[in-house]
Image (cartoon, rainbow, N blue to C red; front, side, top):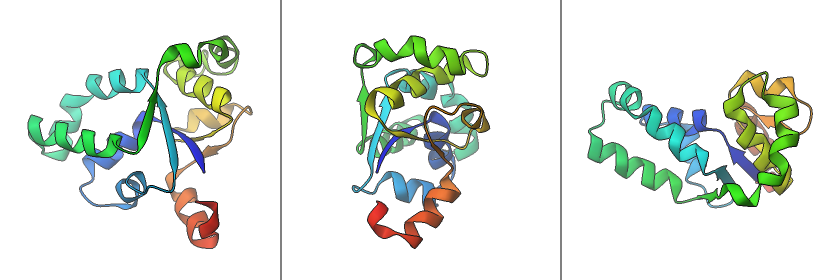
Length: 143
């Protein structure tokens, strides 16, 4: 399954020390992608993540690197032709989500996000973590 991972998924996995989200991010049978902007968003939230996770800066860096091992970070130049189309659907809802939608359009992928804003567009399918978990156990070949 090809998925563009929203930043809120990584933040959730960093804050919760154990959980299905982190487990799924570490699975090698998911094709996970994120726009390069994703790294900037994580850095913008690092103080909140450190506080909520109770991780030191070094520990947080290690956890981020671990979670990113299975995520392909895609440079903007590879999906920039889709940005204008993505803006049509997401800019008025949440401008930060434009890059995620543009990448999903470019890759023909779905989006993995717990952000309800992605439900306001009909261009790509959005998977909440709970839905991914339930589908995984119904159909392990989906993954």
